[in-house]
Each structure stands twice: as structure tokens, then as C-alpha cells.
Image (cartoon, rainbow, N blue to C red):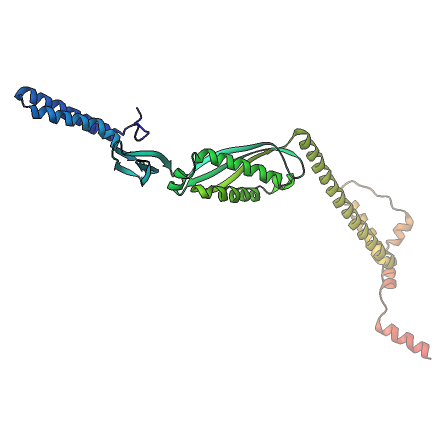
Length: 309
């Protein structure tokens, strides 16, 4: 049964003391009955009164609790944690404040983003009471107020953000929400530790359109890469053709290398035209190499002397 003065059930320790007082009252009444001493009856009555009032004035607060004590309607003090005593019918415990970190879930359904896309957003806020007096006296229900402020701030943030930013920059949105909500709840003695957006749901039709757009972007990038590769390959072929055109010996060596690569496999016969076979003759190849080689210094000097003579 809850006490009208404290708003909570008496503690086990107070119940134990009350039981002991009742036993003492019974023992005192028994002694008064046997000895016919009226004082024993008076002491028994006092024990009974103390046993009834003790659970109302002896209160134990847990480690994370703070009790707001009012005396004749005015703030008398903040008690806890541990054991403390109040004056029955003069002091009352207005409320109990939990100072542990707590969570509140909130959401925004079918809220339009800055680019007019309806989204459903689920989020969670982690908060803690840092000023017990303000949380108890300046707002009627700080838990409900935190949920309402969080939901309003979430809707405002969604309306000021485009869908792409909401999906890709979720950490930034968390920080914005934390700052906005924390600014409003600081006046109530509540600090916001963090805000986390858990889910952003968009309409199914828009999901299909975004999927097709992403696929088209990937195909575009793949085609660009393929075209760039083809361009590089073509440029390499052009450079090789220019080298072969200016150096017949290089062309002959390349042809011989192709024949060698083709004849590495066992049991393979290659038919080569006689003209091609003659061109691969070492003597003719040496002549081609000599013709394609740059002239030496001695030949240039002899040529210049003949021209001078």
C-alpha cells in the first residue's frame, strides 16, 4: 500500500521496525494487565502510534533516486540516496527523480523532406536528468515533454533536409537533432546525451525508381571505363604500327616470334608461304636489319669525302 505522504510503499526496513514496535506495545500491554499499572497501557499506546507513523516518516532512497521534499507546500530540500526522515503531515515527498541514463523512442510518419518526398523516420534519444530541482519544479511531466520536443524537432529537421542528405549523412542529422533537442530540454534540467536515427523508410515506388537510377549510373560508369580501355588499346596498336612501319627488322622479328608461339604446341603443323619463308631467312633478315640500322660515323665521313671530291 502506498503512503499518502511519500507516494510509495514503505520500505522493508521501516516495516521491520514497525513490527518490533507493535511487539513492544503488546508486551507493554501484557505487563500492565498482569501488574495493573496504568503507565504500561500508556506506553503501549505510544508504541502503537510510533509503529503506525514510522513507515510514513522513515524513507530509503536508492542510489540513483533523488526525493523532492516539500514542507507545507514549499521546497524543503532534495534527499537521497540512503535513509532520511521527514515529519509526518508536515513534510511530503512530491516526486522521485531517476538520475540514470534513460531512453525514449519517437518517430515521424509521412513527413515531407525538403524535396517533397514523404518519409517515415524512427529514432531514439538518450537523456539524463542533471538538475533534479528544475526537472521537478519547472515542468509537470518532463518525460512526456521530452518525447514531444524530440518528435517536433525531428519533423523540423526532415523538412529542412533533402532525401539524399537524410540517407547518406545520418550522423550529421543525429548531431543536428541532439543540439536542437538539448537546447530546449536544458531549461528543464535534462541533458541529451545522444540521438540516433534507426530507420528511414521511403515509399516503395520511389525505392524502385532509385534502384533503377543507381543501376543506370553503374552501367554508365562501366561503359565509360570500357570506352577508355578501348581507346588506350587502339593507341597502343597505332604506336606499334608506326614502329613496324619505320623498322622492317622489327616486323620480321615479330613474325618469327608469332611462328614460334604457334609451334610450341606438340603435333602442330604450320604452312607458311614461300615469300614469307624467304623473308624470314637469316641472311635476308640480316640485310633488313643492316638496312634499317642507322649509318655509322665512318660511313658518314666517307660519304662526305666523296661529295667533296
